[in-house]
Image 1 (cartoon, rainbow, N blue to C red):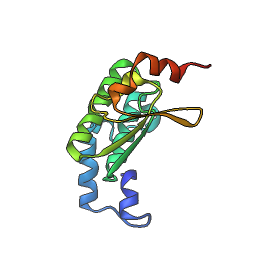
Image 2: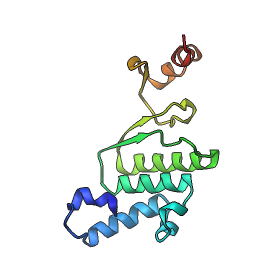
Image 3: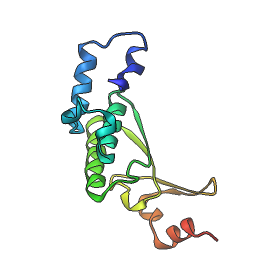
Length: 142
């Protein structure tokens, strides 16, 4: 429900619509079983699902994801990737994702902006971005 605060206002009470949206996002992200569990007792993958659900309850037009797959095991990466794809397809969201893990770029990614030393070094199509030469230049320390 914390994600709804921006919609309903800090000093207003959530109504039935707010609870319905929160329930829908818990269902979408498959975290209903975590409803009553303290945040300190959930895994990293579960925490990222909670973060995604919280963001989606705000009914955004643009979803910003900052290193969403950092420190997750391969199974959690696959699950979170599927959930992001489902949210994209269901809500027709624009998704902006920051990642150093290029292997985790979703297949639906149609534009890649690569930065090095605070400068944009590439801005274009995914298939043009992920060439071995471009990746080597991006991560090369020279």
